[in-house]
Image 1: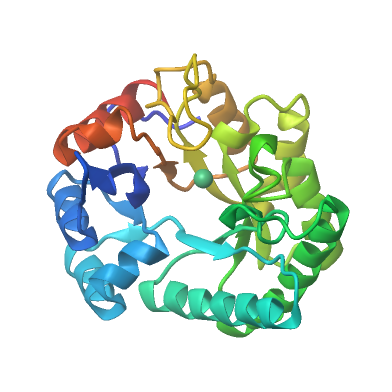
Image 2: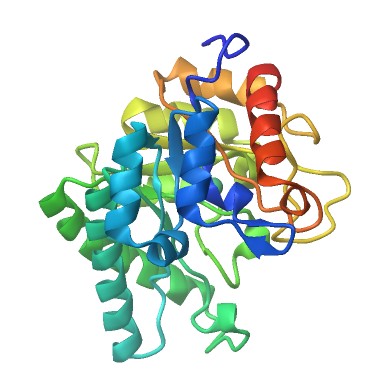
Length: 292
Ligand code: ZN
């Protein structure tokens, strides 16, 4: 396993980690400046942040700083309740692919969607199997567009507590079943984004990391699971502040040959978003060296 203790060469910052400091949006271009100033080499930006900053300006700033991407957040949300919804999802995912290409991302991360309408508070039905079938169909169609653009798709399984509203793919096994069905040749075009927050508890975690292998491990996201967790979405912990055995999981991932970034992704409305953004970034660097 790589030794992270001496530097932060393999730290990436998911820009949601510092998106809203002390009640104010931290503009993406300023986040990129702050990362570069600290010798951080990679980021994973969110589409809404890129849209606010401008796609061309974001690409320019990344290049100027020599910043790489560890992923692009995010495509997906494939589930729909009518033809218009299906088409809208398709169009939006193609745009996400184009943006990912423009920014030089290594993959487009997919949060696949839950029951249609649930995220807005009004689920159209209760048939999660139907939602999962729509996800499979949506990824199959997007895969053709992704092939054309040579932009890999990384399915991110989310913790089951998000099955209703955000993603009905909830385990690595489920994600890998889909990968094997849609990309049996393991072409590199389809894989998973492994986020420890979503997967740490899974009794099949080690077996599924091994099954994924290097070809399917496209991104690795870290944070920690706080005790107690006070909010289902926005109470992720800084690495080292919770119960996830981060070095053990990274060892499993690296045993498969994964040699990319460890991307810190924290949504923390009560804690890390309440601090100065520079302090949060400095803490990410320190924890990356000591706890990841
Ligand atoms: Zn993630």
